[in-house]
Length: 309
Image (cartoon, rainbow, N blue to C red):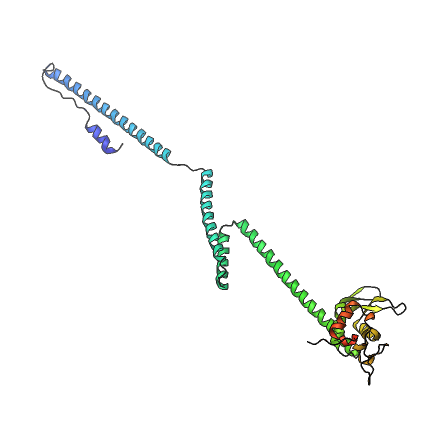
């Protein structure tokens, strides 16, 4: 209770009125009456003080009760409540992010987008997707992207290596066949290359002990004829050896080399016992593949007429 209210209670205490005369008519009785008036005043003051103290006490109790009531009305949140609030906020955020992500994907489905526009949308989409990931998820995503990028680069390098290797091997094979054909005075080196190219491959060289040398050179699985039995066999030869062997088989390849053609009258004939007008190659000595090749490129060698275009 404030001091103002306390003073009001004190100044409003009951007072006792004393009158002269009556039983206390004489001076001595009057003096006794004065003593009785003082006692009444003191009693009244004591009662007023007690009432004021009681009022203060009750006021303090009321104030304490009001404070307790106020505290009781305040909401107290636990950790579980806080977690719930955070989870709900995160859910709403993820929902909005998901909607935005879906919008970007729908835009990217447009086939008419220009390259720059598509690149910008893809970059924005990645930024949105990052917003919905936790740190652990983003770290895992980055690792996955790095692995995919590394794998793509390795595959691209492998493809390039294989392409260059194939080009190098093809160049070496073609050059070796052409040089071998020219060295044996072939009429047309391209004919020799056309016959031998499908049979040629690159092979790693070996020393006398069979150890690889790390050097590759072209070799030919040549369809040969055994000198002793006359049967068809396959021999492994270098381009030079294969073309030389072709020159040694005039019944099969006589028309391909200048030295196998008889000059002068009847120069259309070739060594090997094939008469002029019958063709320069005996078709019975050719494999099916060789026969089709010669018939397509040089039918006169088989005694056939050249097809008109």
